[in-house]
Every structure is written in C-alpha cells, then in structure tokens.
Length: 112
Image (cartoon, rainbow, N blue to C red; front, side):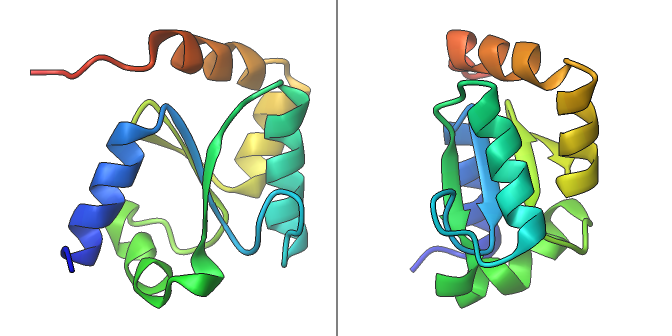
C-alpha cells in the first residue's frame, strides 16, 4: 500500500476538482461536507470525492498534507481552496463556478 501522503498527492493531482468529505455528496455525514458538496453540485461540477470516514489513513493524514486541520477540504487543480466556509463564500460571490469550469475544461496538463 502506498504511503498515505503519496496517495493523497496522487488523488489531488489526478482530479481537477476533488472534495475530501465526511460521507458522500448524496449522503453527507456532516453538515459542512453536505453544504460544500451542494455548492459544487450547484456549479454543475462533475467532481471527485473521497469519503474520509471509510479511509482512516486519509482521515489521519489529510490535515498534515496541506496543514489544514478540518474537513471538508476542496482542491481545484491540485491547490487547496479551503473548507466549507471558503467554498460557500466563493460560491455566493459567483467565483466558484468559473474556477471549477476552468479546471474541468483544462483537465490540468502535467506541469514540469
């Protein structure tokens, strides 16, 4: 099994939009995760997600990966965007959808 931090890095780099959350977008296990997923859905995003509750290594190591202590965590084009509050704020300002659409359109080419 790969090192948990390496697995996270690969997940973040191989998915233009990925949400680490408690539960799933259809069955969130926490209100913050549910609201973040709803904001992404409202953008029409076809986003990847990881249910951290079924992967104890991800649950344990994700806060260390980006030095962000809470869940959910949203990454776009390999960059930590933030948690629920930041995701909702970007959505309310109309900034989240263009970020997501640009990431999905580009499917992020490999950087050297």
